[in-house]
Length: 289
Image 1: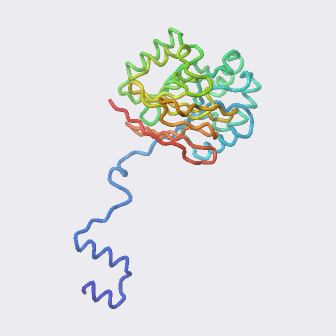
Image 2 (image 1 turned 30 degrees about the vertical axis):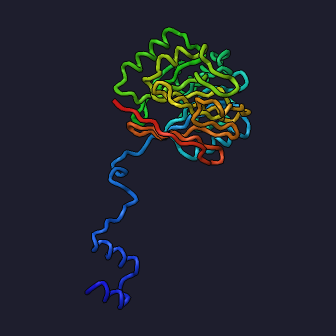
Image 3 (image 1 turned 180 degrees about the horizontal axis):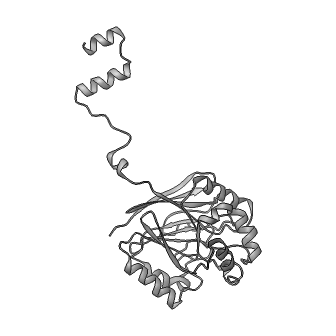
């Protein structure tokens, strides 16, 4: 029975007939899922948040947003206010992030470093069941995450470890994170004297470096193949960014939120997300053998 006769008899819905006609004419129909999409593994989901250990409403809103996303990891980029005491870790940090703490991998901030033995170290030993080093590595989604301590950047043991991690990696699918950013168009300015040893150990070899410290969002243009992100809008009062700084690719100093990272083998998709769930900026960084 021809298509015309079927149409006259009302036997086929119009949409079905249209498909049949197109196929008959040799016209291919696009699928919403390509073979590449089906072959691509599900990404690991990581969030990076800094400067949210205040116990207040904004960090709790950020924490709730992240918890709803059910991440595999949360990188905490430092600072529990005001001085990182044991009680402040209990109230201002655990009281904000709740169950997310069990998925967190931290780096020390300047606000808790002076009392790290009784605050930071004791808290994370309780979470992990053993001492958490001030610099360490772990793996997720085909990427290696390197946590360094920007409060002790010239430590020879740390620098040797960081260089060995970079040199011994099977690929450059590496993310380094520490508290103080090397480049900064915000209130604190560049931290060359403070973190140059760390930056020099990874630049050109590690494609992504994450920091907090300045209370805003910043994405810098690549420097020697390394892209630096500042995600310090976790809930403390915001700091103004000089958005005219020519080194910036993106900045935002008007909202709280975090950096959402989807990690695929060979690629990372990084999105700054406002506390209301809005996408502020998305970028992609590739890596390989």
